[in-house]
Image (tube, rainbow, N blue to C red; front, side, top):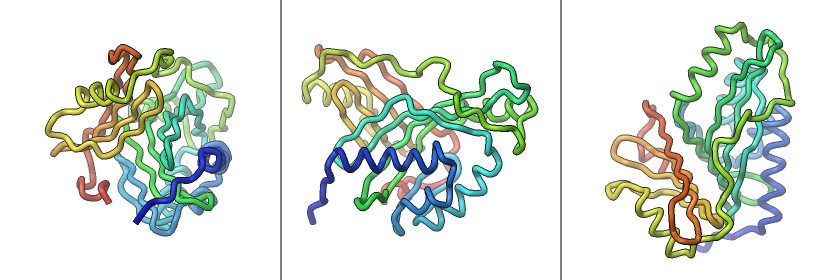
Length: 238
C-alpha cells in the first residue's frame, strides 16, 4: 500500500501549529489532541505512549511539575512527511538574575494528514538534561516560578551548514561511516548538507546529526543516546 506524501506547505503549517499549541502555548491537552488515536510517542527517558489519550495522560502531569519551562527551536528539516528538529528547553533563573538553565534535545515527527501526527520520537542524553533540571530546583525553582518566554539558547549547539552540498552518494558514504556496522539504521532524514539519523544497537537507541560538505567530508557530527532505556527496541520499531 502506497503512503500519501503531503505537500511541504501542509506539513510545515501543521508543524508550526504543533509548536504554537504545545511548546509555545503550553496547552498540553489540546497538543495531545493533534496526535492520532494510534500515534506512537517514544520518549527515551520516560517511556512509550500509544494514542492521543495516553500521550495526554503522560504530558499533562509531566509539564505541571515544571510549568516555568519554555522552548525554542534551533533548526528543523522537513523531508516528505517527516520532520527532524533540534529544540531547546529553558528554565528561568529563580533568583531573577542571569543564571542559565538550558538543554537541547532532538526529535522526529511523522505527519499523518489533517493536521495530525502519527509518531514522535525524542532522543537525548539525560547526562546533559538531568543536571540542568536538578540544579534549577536546587537554585529555588518550583511550580510557582514564573515563565520567561524571551529565553533563547545562549549559543547554538550546531554550526551553520556547509554552503557546498554533497551528492547523494557522498552523503550515503558519510552516513555509512557514522553508523556502526552492527546497528540498524531506523530513520534517516537528509536535507541538503545535514543528515538526522536514529539507529539501534543491541543495547540502546542512538541519535546522530551529521553535516557533510560538497567534498564528502564529515565537517560536524553530534552523537547522543539515553544511557538507561526503559523500553525494548521492538517498541520503537512499530
